[in-house]
Length: 408
Image (cartoon, rainbow, N blue to C red; front, side, top):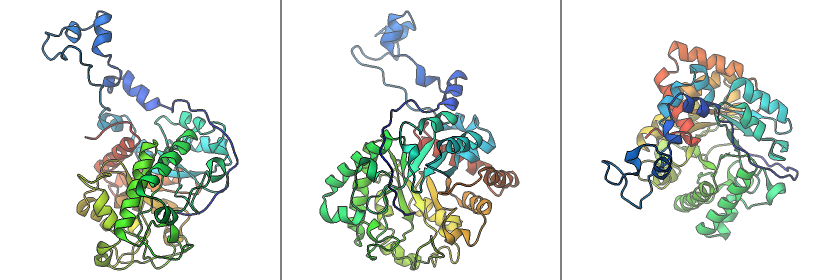
């Protein structure tokens, strides 16, 4: 996705996000571990005597604090959602950033897992206007933007301009890029943004203004990997969830998927160059394992998908899951405003194809009625086209990515 917006200035106060599902689970005893008092408190109030007795079996040694409870298990949280609401968690839909009331109505009516703020208006990022969206959601909402720097920014007129990825890599050390990303993430978070669909790990020497162009850190795979990791770690330190894109590599694509079909070199060629960042950064034991999502582009890859876009082809998801052993959230690129998809499928069919192929999240940048998307997905779930178990696993991944629970 691309574009540049020019928001107007504003400020934001943070309040707690909507926690309807969490409150219900606590009340039902499913995540009671979140509200267990520490040993000092129970001893002081006449609670469990074992908690304050150093001689009691299993008691903490004197002078040590009890370990804080870990995040709750995702399985009860998924079970507390209806099948339709589990599907809704798997949608990230566009909202009109100039229409806070309309955006809130979309969230309240659909209970989607996330919203995307695109376009050229940014009223939602001013004066605490994101909070009503959170309040309208029974489960804390992922609020996402594209904030890569350069020509892909959302808050440059609010909080200052940052360079493009290519400029950053040419002029800054990885440590400096980490700090740029950390600061930017803090600014996004202060405005109610919780996800940034960045960084791009595409390896490209395309001209600056081409579809990837200066959105790529470098045409050298190792340099692109190093700087993408630096950005991702800074972004995480600033409190915003990131997404690597565009798997399996848009840097040598034949065109712009906003405008039509795009093909890449054969898979064997991508593995030598474009897939290097994924091999280095995600999967067990890799630097970003468990800390970031991956976005699939709309790319036709000879030797992998043939004439199908990767975002709706099961082979692309199997490649990421099995060869690269990635177990985090996988999302599509925009299904609603990119002709590589819309020239072939209606919005509901694109959603169903993506979710059944293996996407955890189907992304739409444009404002579109959500009910037909959910109706089609619910029908596919009922017929087995979207397997029920796979739907539960995907919903759990989404909840985990929002730091609501743990699958491990």
